[in-house]
Image 1 (cartoon, rainbow, N blue to C red):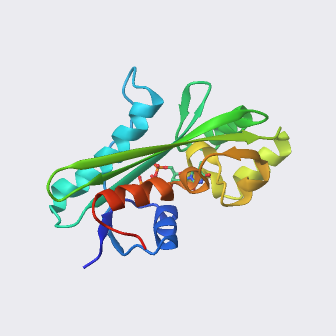
Image 2: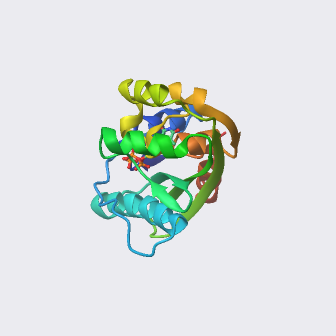
Length: 191
Ligand SMILES: Cc1cn([C@H]2C[C@H](O)[C@@H](COP(=O)(O)OP(=O)(O)OP(=O)(O)O)O2)c(=O)[nH]c1=O
């Protein structure tokens, strides 16, 4: 039997969980990711990670824990999720250019006995100034379209990242330090 169920359709989260050698199965949580009025970015990212874990827990009632995660980019208090389309993606990249932003990644573990364990990773990322030509060329690579903030630190987007303070895995979508801590609290030793 695997150690846990990963409530995610994200290939990045599978890759990151593979990196620490955890055995898991995948079950996709289909939840509404719309923000609530007056919800802070921190409350938003934590709620979505919890809803993903709980949706799968409620559907499958597994004997093993369910792990949900959510990642957002926060710039000047605004939440940048995944771009809706090209115009939206280009606008996000123009806004990120030459500035620092935060990346919030929440993880939630819904245990078989109904308990819920949560953690969040906060990173600061500074982008160098981007030329319009680069922004367009980057969008055309196809990489930004399904990523929060319209970039991937693990991909070509790395060339924009002048500075990172925090967790690389957290920015990529699953903070591995925090995830291992939750697993340990649930009695699952990674090593
Ligand atoms: C900032 C950043 C985000 N991302 C990705 C991670 C997430 O997959 C995505 C944020 O969207 P999420 O809504 O957190 O996740 P998802 O819809 O891809 O997957 P699921 O809800 O099924 O778990 O952005 C990167 O891959 N690299 C980065 O540098």
